Image (cartoon, rainbow over all chains, first blue to last red):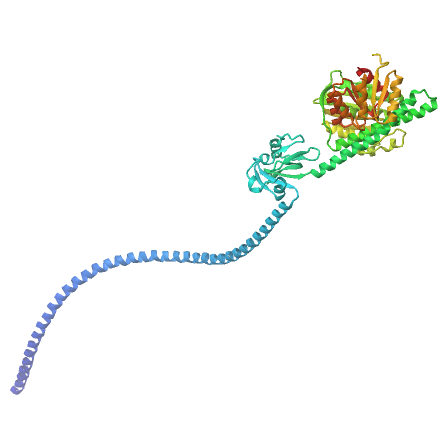
Length: 473
Length: 123
């Protein structure tokens, strides 16, 4: 037992010893652990502080992060927008590139075309200038004030002034117009205003005037002055003129020929007339007297025809100078009536004259007599025996109207349009015994025009004709 | 006016016409002398002043204008009637300016017109 107890006790002692060692170890460990624990506490405190700091930092960082998120979102949106814009811009750019390419092409084409056109224009301008320069008529262009803006080569040659001397000057200063007698024509200003109001002013052989050259010599000219229209607006005038020395000489020769020819025709005619008149005086037997009277009348008619032809020649050459005076229509009609009283009696015609006594007009009496003589003579010649002729004169506003009415053969409807033609004779009278030349009415129409009047007529075959002269009183 | 024995000088180179007109005027009782050119007309007028001169314009030696000029220069006062076949207005005016009383175109003239004119202008 003891042994057992001893064993136990030893065992216990060993165990106790072991336990003490163990305890000592544990104590050391505990101390160490305490140290560790303390260190841990310190560390924990530190960590705690650190944690706290970190928490603060974290919050701040969280705030920043949130802000950053917002900013990022904004930026994202912005980026998206920019991306869209960029795409659009890219589109535009691409389009621009395409357009630019196209433009480049068109510009090149245009340049080419412009070059071609400019060449064309240059050519046509040069051509136009060459044409203007080569025109045989003098050309002068003036602006609305009448100042010269262009003259052609012929102008320079004709009047002796060079372009550089005349540009900007008035035509009337550079090249004065004068009439036959050498008096300066002051109508130039009037022509300008006439033309600027849209009229065309023509001065031809029938209204001759002279242009004076730089060297003071002169030449007869005819001219046409026309307004220059640009888009319906008158921007100036252009005058073309010609030297009509040749035409004037031809005219002069024609006048001389006509007057010589008429003189040569008249000379033998005068002898015939006077010889026949002398025979008539000798109280010849009836049969011979009939023949001589007929011949005498024919001679008188021939003299009248020569006068008519001379008159026509003068009218056609514009050589009639009118002498306007105040005349009594009754007096003039009386003179005309007396001229043809013999014819009226021979044709056994009745004549009625209706003319107010106070009726007057300012007109060339000889020309008026010429018109009325022809109308009355026609009425007598183309009205059968026993017929009636009426002369009616009256004032109509500013005009005088004279009607010569007959109950004669009339003018066939189909031929009425030809009545004013020279040498025309209506078919229904051409074969009758009445002598006629077909120049009387031609002359009447022309003289009427000369005195500023008109001739008209109404006619019915076999009923009669009324010729009407209308002219300014 | 009585025209018998009044003296009319006809200056006309057409002898036939001068004769016919002269015969007509003589038949009216006038005393008629005929000159066939202008010079002759002036010479006659210087010797015996007629009561009237019937003057043609186109005359040999001295034409009608020349005759008028000499008459004016020598102050020979005689009424003049021109009978010419020139109908030109300028010629007529030239004559009227030289104191010519009347101007007739011969081929248009007849006795019935000439006689009253002569009676009217006889000196």
